[in-house]
Length: 237
Image (cartoon, rainbow, N blue to C red):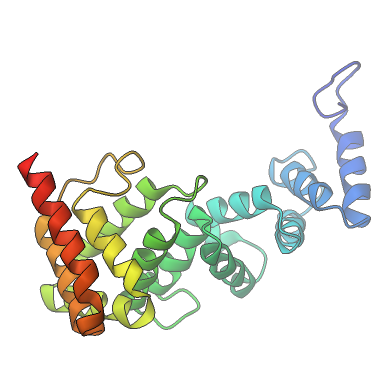
């Protein structure tokens, strides 16, 4: 109320003091709101590093808004001026990626793609992006469109040999179901509503089927047969 001037005069300093008190009591929303006040420039005498520290503290308590804000700042090339440990940010990104947090996944992948704080590994970047796209495709808060756009950008950077290695890395790391989901995605039988920009790519779909057969052999035949049957029905319609 003090920050927005509801029911009285606006008092940014008093609002920030209250946020700080809540943060000192260990409240995640207190950490988040105080960080926002600092980074918005409402407290010119307080260093930006303090704001990032409070974002981190809120993230550690599972505050999704803080995680979103911190990852957005990192992605917007503010990473060079973030006055907290980049290692801490990337640990949070890795955790967020596993839970299906879209921005965390993008930060995690970008770190491997560019070699930020890790040894550069473009295959691993593609592997994790493709794998998490398949795993979290149906999660309501997961932005599949943003992920598939980025995945296609990475795919365009690879030679055919590198792309084969990337697909194999997915197969070695993920389950058979992930490979079939990726085949369905490229055949446009899954995720249509979430990924309107993705055009059907039967060749890429077939490559994921081939990879699944290569890594899972006879155990994949039943499922691959079902998949091929659906393709025939779809084409007939």
